[in-house]
Image 1: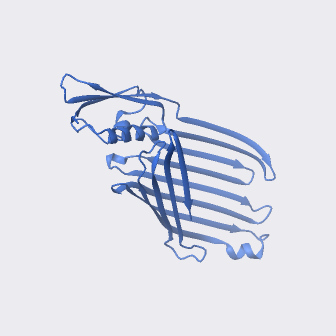
Image 2 (image 1 turned 90 degrees about the vertical axis):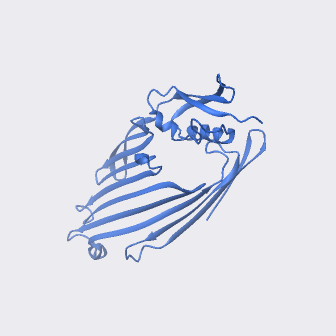
Image 3 (image 1 turned 135 degrees about the vertical axis):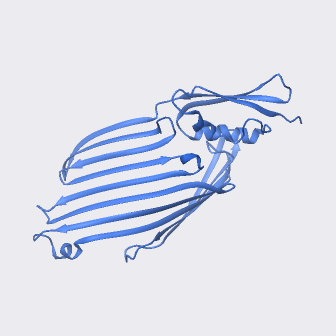
Length: 272
C-alpha cells in the first residue's frame, strides 16, 4: 500500500477551548507517516475529554500526492454547572452551594467546589485536576476538604476535620499509567464539662498521613467507547503515620471489552 505523510492538522470550532488542549490528545503530528490506527485513537481521545458535543474529522488530499491534510471539527458544549439547594431534616435547616466546571478557562481543567451549611455543621470541598500540568505530560490532582461540627451546647463536644491531598497521573511506560497520591488528615476534638467520659478521653488533635498509588495497564483499542481490549488497575493505600485504626488496603479491578455483533459491545468487570 502507498505511504502517506501528514502535511498539516487543522482544528475548527474551538471558540473557548485552547487549541493545545486538543493537540495534546493527538498521537500523530505534522510530518509523521499517516497511521490510521493512531489517527482513530487520537479522535477517540479528544472525544473522551467529555467537553465537546461532537467531534468529526476528515483526511483530504493535497497538491502533493504523498501528503494529506487532517481536518478536525469540534462543536463545543456547556461544561459548567451551578447548584443551589436547601432542605430541612432531623438536624435542622441546611443549605448547599456548588460550582462544577470541566473546561475551566478553556484549558481542560476540571474544577469542583461546594459548601454546605446547617445549624451544627459546616462543610466545604475544593477539587482540581489540571491535565498536562506545565507541559510535563503529567496531571496535577489536588483536593482540599474541611468540616466543622459544633455540638457543645447539646452534647458537649466540637470537632474540626481538615484533609488535603496532592497527586499526579502519568504514562510511565507504553500503556502503563502510574498515579501516586499523598494525603494529610487532621482532626481536632474539643469537649466541655457536659461531654461523656468517652468523648473526654478522645479530646485532642490527631494527624494521619497516608500514601496511595494506582497502577493501570490500558490495552483498550480506544479511550472513548472502546470495543476491544481491557484495562486493569491495582491500587494500594498505605498508612505513613502510626495509628492503630489505619490499615493497608489493596484493590484490584479489571474491565474487558469485546464486540460480538456490529456496534454491540460486551463489557465485563471484576474487582476485589
